[in-house]
Image (tube, rainbow, N blue to C red; front, side, top):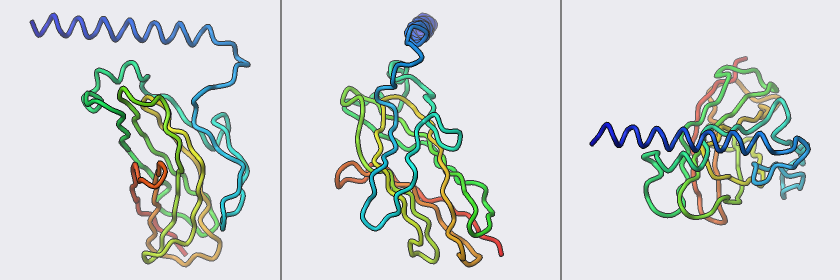
Amino acid sequence: MTRLKTLFTRSITAAALALSTAACASIPADMPTVGAPSWPTTEKPGMTNETAQTTTDADIGAELVTAPMLLRFDGNCRQKGTQIALEKHVVGPRYVLAGEDISQSFTYTLCGRGAETVDGTLISRIYHDGQPISVRERDYRLTAGRWHVRFEATVPEGAPGGRYDMELEFQDGAAERFADKQPFRIVD
């Protein structure tokens, strides 16, 4: 019985992958992407307006890791309702100079029988001695599936050497959906 279940699961997965590949191949190249993560151009109070980024830029992007259809077989997505999970958060390089760029990437999963997208605010903060020294907020749309997202942040000029934390947070309205901090060091 277990072998039959395994064969059935593999057949369904292969069929879903074939269908999604065929569907993607038929999309015209000039068609805009619907539901992809978005980067705004609007300025938030107290923040500097950074240049708008799209998922096609070399320094920022989002990559679909697992299609929503295939997540139904994932153990994390078997509960009812919409679930959002931060699976991985990485900051690098771990040692930087003040004024240099630091890369931040994360992998999230949005699954369930609820919404296909969740709109909210993606917040990136740099902390030193428990105090935020840099905050960047963006309107952001989480899209169904497992996604890997990466972007750059700039360490403030004149920041003293020592241990720092880079925090990533996603808020949906007033509720925090996920948050994580990763350490790095500024070297003199």
